Image (tube, rainbow, N blue to C red; front, side, top):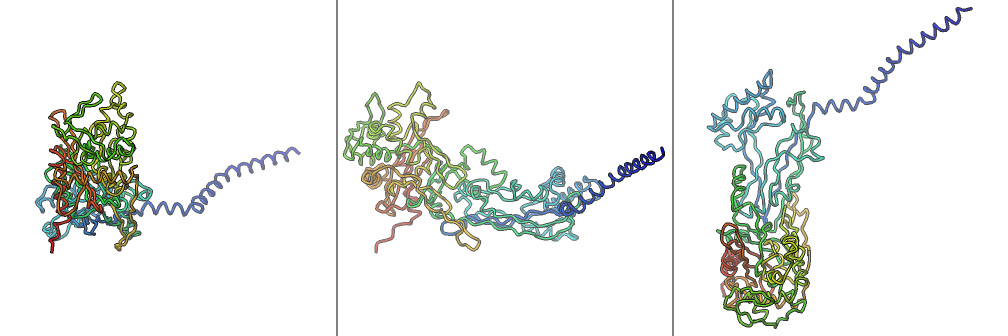
Amino acid sequence: MAKAPERLAYGLRLYILAAVLAAPLGLLILRLWFVQVREGAKHVQEITRQSIRPIRLNAVRGRLLAADRSVLVDNDCRYELVFRVAEMRQRGKRRNTVIYILRRTLDFARLLGRLAPISEKTITLHLYVSPAVPLPVYTDLTPTEVAKIMELSPPVPGVSVETRAVRRYLQPAFASQTLGWVGRYRPEKTEEMDQYQAAYTGYEMRGRMGLESRYNTILAGEGGHRLVRVDPVGYVHEEIGVSRQPVNGRDLLLTLDPKAQVAANHALEGKHGAFVVVDVRSGAVLAMASSPTFALAEQTTETYEALKKRADMPMFNRAVDGNYAPGSIVKPLIALAALECGAIKPATTHNCTGRYRKYWLNIGCAKRWGHGKLDLVEAIKLSCNPYFMDAGIETKLENIQPVFAAAGFGRRPAIDLPSAARGLLPSREYALRARGPREPWGLADTAFISIGQGLSVLTPLQVAMYTAALANGGRIYRPFLVRSVLKANGGVWRNTAPVVESRLPVKPENLAVVRQGMHQVVSAEQGSGANARNEVIDLAGKTGSAEVTHRDRPKTKNTWFIAFGPFADPKYACAMVIEDGDSGGRTNAPRVKQFFIDWLGPPTPAE
């Protein structure tokens, strides 16, 4: 009877042992099913992804066109010698391949009579980082050099002459700081670029300045890719085909008038300064010149570094980024503020004795012996400092500020460029921050900003926009450089519509008085800007000059001239600043006169 429990216990142990032995086997079978059946498709995809790689294909960059649709910036082809390192791979260690490629480099250097452009370090880095991408050796081959390479017999395996796109500038010094240029970069890290490994992306053109930078995405287009099969080390051993064709970049139709731009460049020749011309009815920039300038076609890595080090800063766009004290060109705005608040009337007179002596102030006029008794229109015509200092003090800062703010002081223009300076709106708060509580805003500050000195700073673009507002009835337009983005067939993809950013808070009758004074600045014999008078266009204008203090040399003056015309029906407005000038009337006005003659042509002979 005792044997039955023993047999039961023995059987139970057998069952337990069988279960223990079967459990791992079952788990193994379950895991195999999970890997091969449940996730099989995923693993196949990962294996394929490891052996098949997309290599990025760059699109053709869009062009920049002038307002008349003439081409300013296009694309050109350059011949370059490249090594396809996968086809030059040597047996054994990676260094064997490096030495082989270096020897072939020296062979071609002797053939072409040039220095070897790449080193052992360059080759090694390329093999580690991007072995699937061709290694560029010489990037600017001449037709003669191409012929020498093609005549090699037998050809060197893995060596080929290919073409690459480069920018071609049809007018090399045409608004260089505004157009900008491109450099060669690795593509930026984006969601679209996540599908590429660094080893399978070559260099692409990317805007480095100006419109090329601001509109880089539109100009660059969309890259495509071709598929290749690679070995475990990363070398390409089979071309599969193109899976997506690149989409070329779109062209930009600019507002720049080519004849006006050339004339603006000529107007600044030999001077440091800037010149901006705009359409008073829309804010479109017709010309934007900054001097000194440089030739885009000659831009290389070496010249770029040299330009950056030059003391005269040719790459600095003075037209949009240059901050200047405005001088007397603010007097039309002071006149408007004074008229609006009732501080003066058009017939209000002031006896200019050559100095302003009032409220314990003693500030000189540009005309040392004085202008005598004069009203508002005459004060604008002759640019009388005491008249406007007195008008400004009576107006008070609180009434000047709204007019200045509406005119754009202290507001960064929303122009389609990577940067634009905001200038400075004079205020008690800024004076407190800049000078501390011991020197608060005083009457002298109000007097000085009334003649464009002291705590007020503007850019030539800001000045051009408020000059346009004086011409068009008070509308401050948003400036723009790109009129349209074009489709591949030349049709319009997107237009830029004029935008009014603010309005001068002035009555039409007050604006009419100021405009009349500005007209006499040019048309009257004694007008401060009479040197701008010409037979091509009837201008209204205003001269200005502002003293600049230097640490290591005597004071100089930045001179200004602003103008709009034709006076009866204004279409254009302009602002010119010249560093280290004599006066706005003697330095700038003749240049503006010549600009309009060069641009709009000589007067039509009477029949």
